[in-house]
Image (tube, rainbow, N blue to C red; front, side):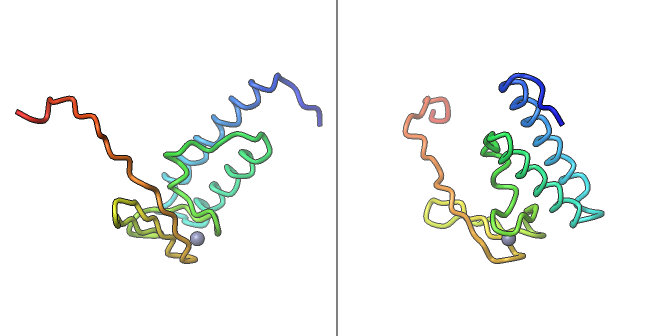
Amino acid sequence: MTRKGTRSDRKHIAMERISILFSQAESFFSWNQEYSHHCVRSARLIAMKERVRIPPWLKRRYCRRCNAYLVPGVTGRVRIYRGRVIITCLTCGWHRRIPTTRSTTTNGKEKK
Ligand SMILES: [Zn+2]
């Protein structure tokens, strides 16, 4: 197996594959949860191999410990506690805290 393409090319393809895998995980979730978890695992493997970062909005869609695809209310729980979003995996109990960014600058459009 030969590796072709420039580094940025391969990274670009890897990113594309990751987003495809996540969208597949989403669409297959209602039929086959195992397949969704498998998609997450494959996406993470691709990210590791090509050393690309999984975008932050996708990072909160899976469990880091057991690679479960997290759907709020089904396999995951999303709560806000003390200004932080806490995502809990209901499969293994792993949780992740994401600080919510407070917007200090108000553009004044909301206030009248
Ligand atoms: Zn988990």
